[in-house]
Length: 143
Image (cartoon, rainbow, N blue to C red; front, side):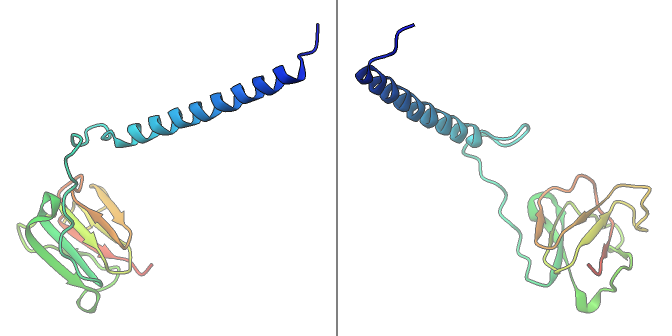
C-alpha cells in the first residue's frame, strides 16, 4: 500500500472537517425541529400552554376547573394545620392547583386523605393545570 502524498492528506483532512461541520449543523437543526413538536397527546404547533392561575407566594391555590378555571379555593399556612387532612368544602373538587407554600402538598382523591384512592405530592413551586383525578382533600407537609 502506498502512502498518501502530503497535499492529498491536507485535502482529505479539510473534507473531513467540512463534513463534520455540516453533520453537526444538520443534527442541531434536527434536534431543534424535534423539540418544536408537541409531545404525544400535546397541543398542535402554535397552540399556547394554559396561562398560570393567580396564586400569591405562601398560598396553596386550588381550582375546580382544569387549566386554572372555575372557582378558586386559597389556603395559607397561617390557617392550615401541617400534616393534617384538610377537606375541601362539601361538593367541591379540584382539577388544577398551584403550590406556592414553600412546602410539599399532597392532593388526595379521597375526602379522608385515604391512600387507598389516588394521591400525588406536589413540590413547592409546582403548577398543575390538569390533575389526573378530582381532588377532594389535601395535606401540607413539614418538608
